[in-house]
Length: 129
Image (cartoon, rainbow, N blue to C red):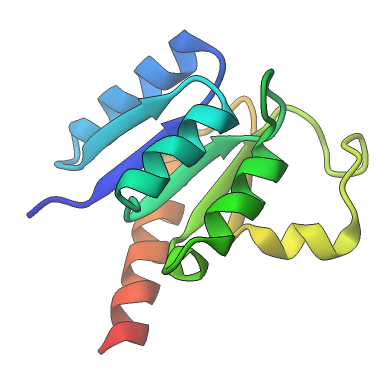
């Protein structure tokens, strides 16, 4: 069974690009256009990995990540934050950076995003055995 990745970004073009990237590598992809929708999707079925933009309307990626982390099993889901801003430009408290397993800056290097994703999957597999 393929791993399920939840891609969360308010830009449709980014979601489409990430979908093509991950589907091309054999992953199942579910999309959300904001954090609120992402939380609703995750509540129905936790994904194996979340790739989430931090700055979005309705609910931002920080709040969505906090809510996903509070779900049963949510603390074990690898979450990659994707942002066009440096962390110093975002109003993020230092302790909040530990919410994410990785942070990737836009413009995203697709090979780097794949490598980080695969490393997080491997890390979770090793920890669960």
